Image 1 (cartoon, helix red, strand yellow):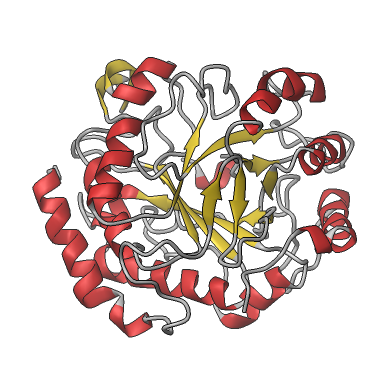
Image 2 (cartoon, helix red, strand yellow):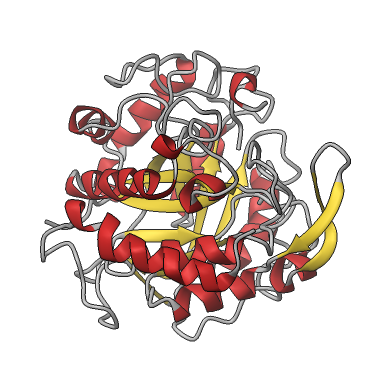
Length: 377
């Protein structure tokens, strides 16, 4: 995640099932979608993987031209809201006006579960209801949604930043609850983690490895991606799951050899790409990403011009987007937030571009809108 510096400053699995049941039984009902939006558990429908392609409910290719919508990972734990900016129909329509067909929504583990002292008005049932409502709203405007666990923390720590990997203390509870909540939503992708620093073995299988947390940088037990897939499937979610690479989701060298086993074969590979990443050139994409995209669908969950946020141009992202479109790799640009820095696409939530970077993305999406089909009506 490339957020502004201003914002970056013990649940068991049994408890998770109780939380998940509460979410489905009580919290989601006020925002229940229509019968055309929801799908019976166990019925293949909506967005799905077929070979190395993502297909919609009609069997047509889905190519994401999306945006990230940051805020739901930090506002709640910082104690001043759930969203950073509006989350109403007008703001969703503004996103769609750029010909966006996908939104990536980062989430906070502590806020979703309502643990470790987050203000109740911004956590637990209220947080979950707000997310469910916003997902339904974005879907109604034709946009798919990826829900990604981004900020998490082991033990009694506050989840005030993106830790090195999901924690065994709370992440399985989060995954179970999230999967139960969205198991009837056919046009979402669930992403059990955003960016990791641990090695491929630990990221797959979990354990005690490179991940640390807190002022003393204490190691904690990691929950791996195989556990994430297993938990989500047991919770009844049958849809698409995005599994990122390692090294801040930029290194996918070991993705094919270390992908989780999914009995439903509904996994996509996710990379995060900025100009100064280790894999931040078209040559690296061709040698590392292209072989993966020939086997499974691939997306750039975060795409920006520069990791250091000091350029507001499009010299790099224009090359990245060209390669992605040529190889049927969808992407979500960072970020639809009015932060007034080079990582922000917009200057306000009406959709006015902030800089040359935002103007380029808006023009690109308009010029290529036929490639980015919205959710079929």
